[in-house]
Amino acid sequence: MSTQHHAHAHVLVADDSPTRTLGIIQIVKEFSYVKTVSTCTFGGLAEAVGRTAPDLVLLGAADWPDCDLTTVVRPQAGAHAVRFISFGHPARTRITPSNVSAGLHGFLPSTATPEDFNRALSAALAGFTYFPRCMTEGLAEYRMRFPQLTPREQQVLDLLSEGMSNHRIASRLGIKEATVKMYVTQVLAKLKVESRLQACLKARGLASAA
Image (cartoon, rainbow, N blue to C red):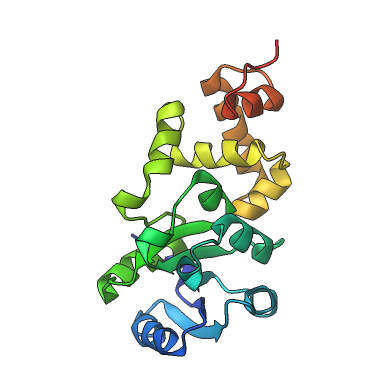
């Protein structure tokens, strides 16, 4: 998996545990494609993202059992497309399509090895996701509802259902607006609907308008 487009990646580690943060820095700085590693606390995430514009954020939100990752991740990115990987205890984290659409590209358990970190970071920086199979039940259920859609088309549909424009979807996913238009056309065709509204209704499990 190539990381050539991020050969000088900036990784931001956001966590409230100094010991764990130091351990992650020691792992990540060994990867040749990582040029800069910066840190911040969980509470300082928004300011750090806005100030440093990282390519990838390693987020310790998994240790916050009542935390909805979507509400944490999406506001931080703003107009800048940021990819996030959460880490911590799997039992405290549930992965959903909304999390992924918000920018969550992976999860690493507390038992992750340096090799696991390398695979997850390489995947995220290349535009892919990296989740343990046991944590993707929600995503599997979503795929079962629309098995004809590719993972990227499913992401686009999820964002459409939130009322996002093509421009905002492009910014969120880090792709060109023309590419989003292509995906929207493909989604409408595969769902056999004629409008974005009908696609949104179908995504929410409602009967599409005539």
